[in-house]
Length: 121
Image (cartoon, helix red, strand yellow):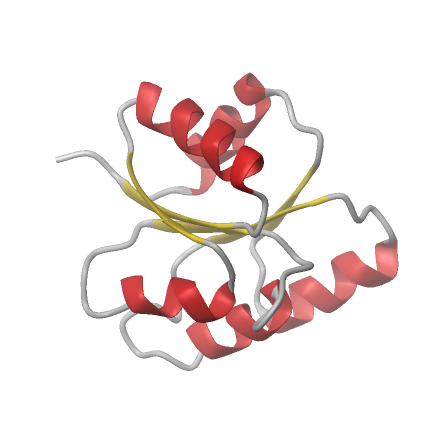
């Protein structure tokens, strides 16, 4: 069975592109529209990697990472930020919250896949 990835982004177009890119590469993908919505997928099912946006309504990416890092089953999964932010302070804040890596939008699908393949266990 392939790796399972949870995508969390409030932009339908970004979700569609990321899902298409990952599914085309053989990954099983779940997609949440914000951090609150994403929590429904963290119900005991196997998630190998989470890719989340930073700025979202209801629960942003930083809050989501902090919640995930408190969940026994998911506290060690790799988490990538996919965001327009490129400031060092935001990267540091994300790292402190528990992010594994950072991908800046707009992204090149091949680069996204390369990073995913590197961090997904």
